[in-house]
Image (cartoon, rainbow, N blue to C red; front, side, top):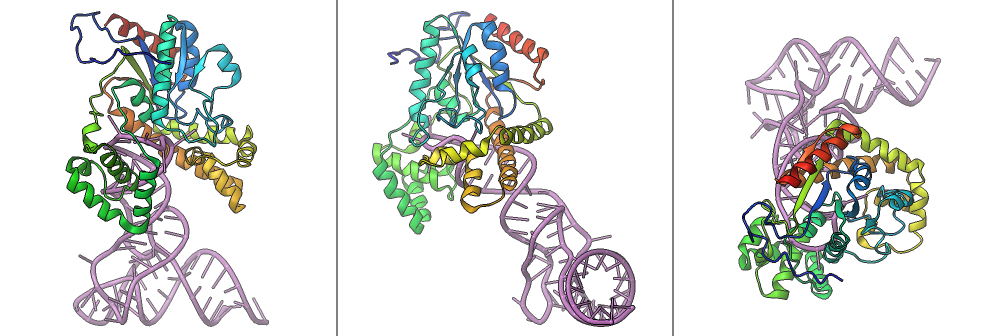
Length: 327
RNA sequence: AGGCCAGUAGCUCAAUUGGUAGAGUCCCGGUCUCCAAAACCGGUGGUUGGGGGUUCGAGUCCCUCCUGGCCUG
């Protein structure tokens, strides 16, 4: 698929202006849910000859359309979208699988002489695609064993073990964070190397592309109301029916916990009132938006805008792009 | 009108025999190398309904008023 072997020396192949040999250009659009990423992408793409490459953990699932605010078939007919509707919601999926697929998509778009427009709110997915990021191996059996040990109350001891064998990793992982402790031990066991040796600098990421990143942050208040409106619109658009349809078949762990789906599935099981579930969706979505912002805020590459959707915001994006092209 | 019960963080509730008012949730901030829309960590927030009294010390005991609920007429 990919065949790409460049990007290996992202440091400074050439310090002179215009001497950047990394593939590109690549434009990225990040920000919290409901910040208007999709709308802006659809405005930008036709003007730039761009194709959208999604960097979203939930848009990959077929049949999960309303709750993920997936671009509609009509929108996708106007602008090509990649990395959307990739797998069945029953299938296990992860960033590690996503990474090479997204990079291949970017390379293909570039190969066509078009501009890849990376759009997404999943911080880890975004970084995994755009930065030097190597995922250590995984093993289902090893992980299952560690998980059952933790479930049996072994977490404190496991954390001690990690602290003894890999102090640097332990320092970065909270003792109560079962998931991270398990993963760190899994990697140590599988590779014989400290987990910490795999970690790059998240605060000083090394792009593997000539990259321009635009960020949308409408502000807390606007986001709050937009999230509430969006959830209400989803309910009206038939979210409950979509969830009921999905519930007829087993869902993967990841797909099951998606915002909007988890709450409605729970309500369905318990026979709880729909409105209560929708309120929970709003709350959890707001919390998620906060986490998204926390993730992107520290990325120095992001050029932020607080403008609402409209001509001004579009002009801003085009200006930023022009400025980036000159650099 | 009389009797009983209850008023503690925005919300739901804790607080041994009177002894520094806590927890969950919400909200805000942070962490992050394959479950990431996940997982985890930290923080703001109270004249304990008002007023008076007893006491070294009152959310806790006494009096009174207010509010809500239930019962009786």
